[in-house]
Image 1 (cartoon, rainbow, N blue to C red):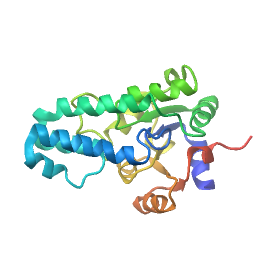
Image 2: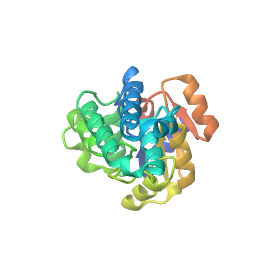
Image 3: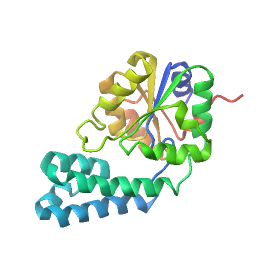
Length: 225
């Protein structure tokens, strides 16, 4: 934990994944239900061949990447469905314990904060601004652009874009993520990654994938006053 906290405290720029570290858009079974709904709609629009390509991919965003690869004409309606469901979820959930405190602490010491998410970027304000009015205006938010799914994590493109917005070099930045694809994206961008996951098994997976440290929640990264 101390390694993770030191990395975050020393970073000139803190890059943070949204769904997981800062909020849980689809807690519990809702995450699986979203994937099921997307795959059902993909089958309805694209038939059994597309459905088969998506079979076994639980992450709805990675399903969108596969749709973009194999049935690009269906990307627009399927992404619109996902965006709608993400925004509905953002209106229901709250920020994670310590999420706003970490953002405020990081900004307060003069560092930059960028939220880097595979979700539609509007979910960030939808959650964080209810927890602290206007906080999102002080951040950089880089998320999924309509019709562009090839650049989503695990590719490093979104992280590279965020670094450009903050004017920071990879070696002076750190990325908080909760998935192996986050670790892969961070490492590809040359940024140290700190894993954030409640489950001990998931933290071990993140460390095995190359995370420099791992904690059970972002509240653990706020130094006690």
